[in-house]
Image (cartoon, rainbow, N blue to C red; front, side):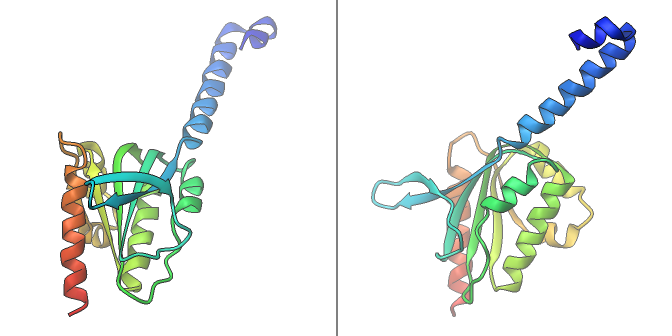
Length: 178
């Protein structure tokens, strides 16, 4: 921006500065998307962060998703999600307590992931979802898949929505094996 002010009119320099800042913001926001698995220890009633698995190898997989899920961050998110290749029913829970923005591209990715799980006899559940993201999900066009998602809003008590999602997963899996 400084160099632009030396050679260009001030209004052009300001415009260049705004565009450069916006580009930097989009690039840096896309680098902060992260997916980790949460390993539940029933004896201690606690969760431990571990690297996300390459594939779904448990009946219930807990994934904590962090960052702004818009078009620039989706390729990184897609790389970190486990591959769906199950022959048995499985539930994937996305804990989204640290997701601040969910764009159309992010919703489309979740919709496709949910559809792929359904095609393999599984299910996607969202928990820890804030009210702004719930509203974004409700107005999305692919309402058929999104409408079928179980969504547990974020609570004041940490892990409360995750616990409810876990219990719902166990109940759903029990109905699938009968």
